[in-house]
Length: 111
Image (tube, rainbow, N blue to C red; front, side):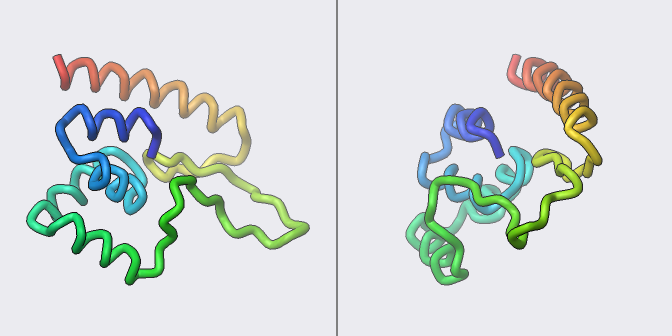
């Protein structure tokens, strides 16, 4: 999930702590919205307690995959849709295409 997605959640009126927790728990904006809807009746303290009880980090930075030393990743994965790519060029093309589509969709949705 990107910082822009977090900004969208904040502009929609969600509390910052709740939006950040949704961002940590999910992979994209739609999943974060679904998570927020599913947990709307729970208090922030209850959600934070569940988060800590599940053993998840409270760090603000995203963590990468755990790759053993001496090995390299053989594919890239889109954070938005989960699609896998064999090389950087394919991932860049997909990101550019996806960004344009998401930007257009956001403009239509929020106008």
